[in-house]
Image 1 (cartoon, one colour):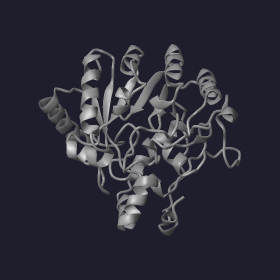
Image 2 (cartoon, rainbow, N blue to C red):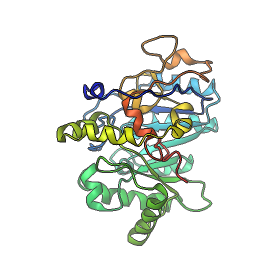
Image 3 (spheres, rainbow, N blue to C red):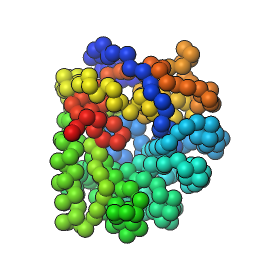
Image 4 (tube, helix red, strand yellow):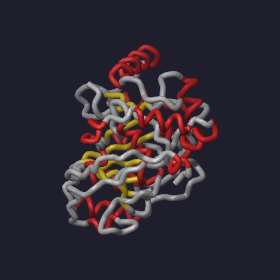
Length: 322
């Protein structure tokens, strides 16, 4: 945990307890074909941590033994896990809604042939990272050439039916700021994206989700190197809205890391703040079979202000914007 998190003590969050579990978010590994400057996972091509077959099997067993409605697959680039397609197939056979948090460019990487068609045939919801509709901004954050590659992938997904009315194939885009500021209005920015991508490239999508950058790992290091970390933390703290606490995604979600350990959310996973269970330092998914987590407290730390600031932030966008 970065030392700076101790310099700015957290204010007293009220106790927030869990509701019924609806979403299992699984981090399939930290390897990625991109190396983004905002990444809270510190993902990149050099990372070796990947979920292996026994843990994949455990995830499937947990899905079968629970009332989970959504399987949220993330990484790194989750598609790089060699068991990705198997996990998707089994979850869909159980009629579980599957979400793939994709950086888009992975869909045309060598070795990923037929992946777009696979996702479409299994009606997997794609949440595609596209931090701007301008080439220079995307390439600045995600690397040279990423914007053009993303546009090609979006064209192909549209051709397969993604984003098309009545297709049942959801294509949602994800925005996060390049700089240490809160995201603009999700509703307003979605219309700008819609117009820009249609007018400039003939691309359509379902929704845009705006997500606040978390002061964790790579983004936190960037803030510290420029001396902006204290100001960003103050921005998040001052913008804290207590009303957002009731809508936090961690109330109905658990996050599983590549080893099978469980956290309240993907951000807590990166901060090594494990889910609180029977006083254990870390809880493995195997220990939660048949366990009702409803009513249990959630672990909070400074980065949680990123979810409660302003209109709030979650893995599916804002929490309280009208």
